[in-house]
Image (cartoon, rainbow, N blue to C red):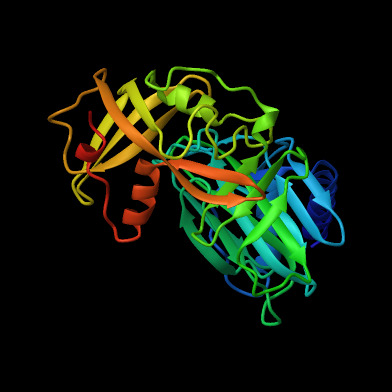
Length: 342
């Protein structure tokens, strides 16, 4: 019996030490999958398991807390099958009116990466989950039926992709508000816009950056596309092109680094390598294109630059392939590559 008591005391001290480390360093915890244990003592068992088996990593996450909100985001995290999840832990009480989560890829043109956002309450029960692509958000509005206390906001991805993870909780927030503009707290020239279409956009002052002064008929690679939106903020970009405006045409040419066909969805995923962000960036097209294109082939596409919205005098821009994709995916459909070939 004494040995059992001693072991419990040791685990309590160890847990306390890890808890202090977590608060002081604001880490993101990279966790392994574990099943909820039955019976009344499962919460203690899960806490002990968290401490003994999980790997704590300080990802230099940004953290801000005041009477209006608690806001935090990580640096870019490499997810893989060994570390498929990351999470923030936050104290949620009845003053929290709204919670939001989202993740973004280093190159926001990537459509192949998918992440699952999950909120767990103090009882380790899932309160909401959503499968999202880059820059798709999830909102949640706590109410009196929730178990308040230490909540976990989990980000899950096991396909060897890099993501930056974002979490915010608003105190006494307007619960009917589902469209929010947030002034970026690090770079004053940039704002984050949570649109009613379910996507997160970034707007910024174009006078803060120089044009690349390219000929608009120049063929752009996936890296060139990224440089067109690059910006000095925590995300590394805004949704506005340096040298192109709505109504312009972007000519695209790059080398295929990966191509695969999924018979279930009848789609082909085509990827290109972005050497700036050191990652593959992929797009989906309807049908089996593997008999037409192969790895190392060059592909030529053209995209119309479209205006999505205007926020604070700044235009949100994209290419028509992305807006087509977002519209079609709601109906489980995909763009035809023929529309963009030239």
